Structure formats: structure tokens, C-alpha cells
Image (cartoon, rainbow, N blue to C red; front, side, top):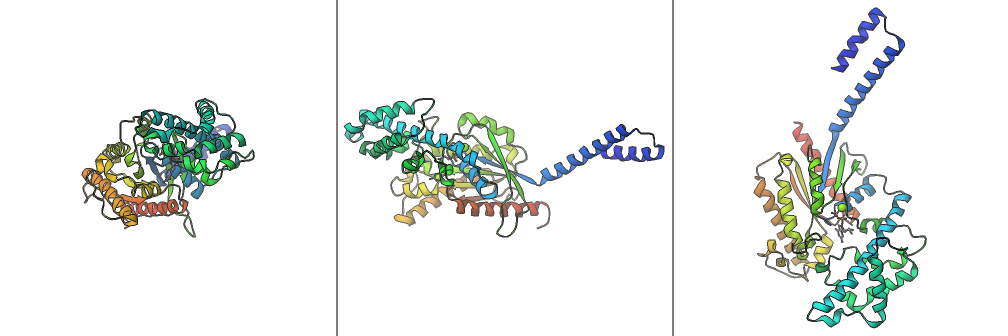
Length: 392
Ligand SMILES: Nc1nc2c(ncn2[C@@H]2O[C@H](COP(=O)(O)OP(=O)(O)O)[C@@H](O)[C@H]2O)c(=O)[nH]1
Ligand SMILES: [Mg+2]
């Protein structure tokens, strides 16, 4: 409309030659702004909106960081350094959790002696527990790192760590505990792996725009990926993002089948994931949205399956172990995958072509795998785009 009006005025001007310089300048400016809006709207249409959804600690932010490393500029020096305090906080919180957890188990468990911290580490433990409870943590000095390392190696703490599923010990615990000397170096700068392991509970919404880089050229598609907080109190913020979404990347941490929720310790995490996935699938806004299901934390799943039977989780209670070793892991994985597929096909009939559903086995820490997975996601979405446009 505005375009038409401006053009019309333009021809009128040339005929009558009656506009002042400032009026002409105003008109030219309006036309410029209008052209920009049209261009931007066109460009926006090319941008596919991708939403990372899933429960807390499912790996959403790790995938988001990987995208930043893989298809964007990565983290500059200041950003890397901003993770020092996060990583040190992870260390302090972990050691406090293990120390206090050991005390708790020593008091209430039948076989309680193995959770009693040795005499030589008792004082250190109390000191570290006090530090871990502060709002502000001190710098991680070499001396403190040594204390933490000594306590970490205590048999009682190790016994407690093996009960991590009931204590909410973060999955990054072991990684950081094994790197304490490096983390406490006065010139320490976090590495890529440190950043990927660092755990911050996301609050609010962050976004990143990217285009997956092909082997030789850039993909034509541009994606805008949104990361959100996963805990229950964060989920009401999600709704604002639900319009016009090309695909939801739903992260499900499949190693959580024997764990309870951070925000409600009476609830099994896998049951929460099931309900959440079902709820997301049923959202009206997502009727034509594709679903990329990332069955994440496969590395932990693989280590857990031989030790903890899948049927400890109510959703998997009909699971029958079949083999041992690698074969059993595959069997268990296929079972879990099938459960998610069944859930999907309860809400979406298999003959529906307006919604694409793909399942990927992921370990969000594995950069090569994430890159490969995103290329597959990109291919699927591009194909879908062409079909929609009637070109395939
Ligand atoms: N071992 C392992 N750890 C993972 C994986 N994905 C995420 N993590 C870790 O799990 C923790 C929570 O991940 P995060 O991405 O913050 O979860 P979010 O709450 O969904 O954003 C972080 O410490 C990550 O490093 C994975 O596939 N394997
Ligand atoms: Mg997060």
C-alpha cells in the first residue's frame, strides 16, 4: 500500500515539481524504510524456527552450545572466562552434595558404615560443605582443589557417588573432579569440553541464528534455534514461542530412567519426560510442526543398562532383558525408542504427511555426532520444505 502511495506521489512530484527538499527527503526515507521492511519480512520467511524443548537436564543447552561451536563463531575469550565461576560453582556444589549425602546415608541406611567419611577427611568435609552452602564461592585455589580431591577419593564419598541417582548429583561431577588441578590453575581458561560439561540451570529464553555448514558449501537454509529452561516453573514461558515453529527438537535424557526429578523427588524423571512429550505433541500450535526427537545421554545409558534394569521405571515395566553386553544395550535402546514412537503415534496417525517425526540417538557432548545429527535434521527439513512448496 505504502509503496503504491509513494510511487504515485513520485509521479505527481515530477509533474508539478512542487515538493520542497525536506519533503522529498522524507518521502525517500519512508520508501527506504518500507523496502527494508519488505526485505526483512522476506528474509524472515526463510528463517526456520527451531525450538529446543525437554525436561530439566535433558541436554538442551549443551546442544545449543554445540551449535554455537559448530556453525557460529564459538565462544570468545571473555565468554570462555565467564564460565570459570560456573565451573567452580559446579565443583563446590558437587562436593557439598556428596559430603552431605554421605552423612545422610550414614544415618539412615542399613549398611551405613561404608558411608562414614574417614577421620582424616572429616574436618575437610565439614569445611567444604560450609563453603558449598555459601552464596558466594571463594576462588578455587590449589589448596582447596587438593582438599576437594582428597575428599572425592574417600571411600565413603565414592560409595555415595555410586548412589548418585537418588542424590541429584550432576552428571558433570566426575569430569570436573578428575580435572581439579587444571581448573585451579591461576591462569585457567575453560576448554571447549569444560564449557560443554558446565551446568547452569537455564532461566528465560536464548536464541541463535545459524546455517549448517556443508562439506563444501553453506546450506541455503537459515535456522533460528531457541533454548529454554526445562524445569516445571520455566515451562509457562514456552507458550510465547509456540507460533510458527518449523520443528521442535525434543531432548529426552534416556539415562534418567532410574532417577527422580530435581523439583519433585517423588517423581521418576522418565515418567515426567513421557508426560511432557505427550503434552507437547498435543499442542494445537504444533499440529503441523515436525518433531526431531533426540534420545540423549546415550553414553550414560550405555553404561547404566548393564547395572540397572530398565524396568525399575514404571513406563518400562514390561521390559524383558534379552542378552548381555552391547547386544543388551541395543535391545534396551530399541525398546525405549519404540515406547516414544508409540506415544507419538497415539497423537499422530501414521498416514499423516503434514508432520515429520524422526528419532536420533545422541550424546550431546560428542561434537562429531551432533554435527552429523544436525546435517540429517537439515536434510529432513529441507526436503519437507521442498514438498510443501510443491517442488518434490
Ligand atoms: N554424559 C553426558 N552428559 C550430558 C549429555 N548431554 C548433556 N549432558 C550434561 O548434562 C548436564 C545438563 O545438560 P544441559 O544441556 O544443561 O541440560 P538442559 O537443562 O536440558 O539445558 C550438563 O552438565 C551437560 O554437560 C550427554 O549426552 N552425555
Ligand atoms: Mg538449559
